Length: 265
Image (cartoon, rainbow, N blue to C red; front, side, top):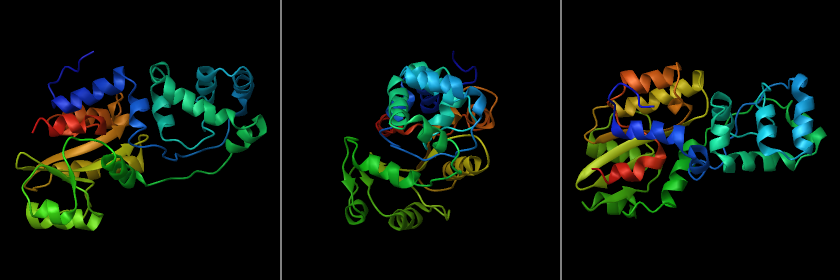
């Protein structure tokens, strides 16, 4: 179903991708494992969990574990599945990956895992950069010297400090927030921040706002927010409403569409 408000094409494609394709399976190449928060176990569905565990029914096992307030393994793809149950059937590799990890534990270990304290992980930027280094964008990665002293197409592979300084000195970027992406295509600069929004709520909203702030900055470049996760789930959630209404004309897109975007410049 098409959204009825005309919006940025790459954002629209990102929403379609998340809704209709193996989005989580493909996204795993970008963000391999991201620990997610864990809460206390609800024992009422434990019988069903034992049953699906014993019969090795991957889909049922995941469906039943998602009924708990907590999931036994730390993985940021879980919150997405909780909020969009239909994604379970569309992403068999993600389900198999999660179930296989769970089935390596015995039932007692599984129960113990379900009662561990909450953890967070902020390693999104390094994961994105690692994926960028290992992805063929069809244009070369350049260190700061090469990128600064040529006008050829390229992606800057620099430290956070180098990228921020380059954007400040050459592109009039004034934010204190670092950047995850700087590229040059056909003489145009592209800058952006990458975020994986694993769920709705406080810290994730702040992450979302950080990425939007880059797009709304006065930098002399094409500005993009490379966002992935729950924001593309259609519904009344604030993030989806924001991207399809308030920010519908901004360059907001999944990392999976970044290459397409570069070649549209």
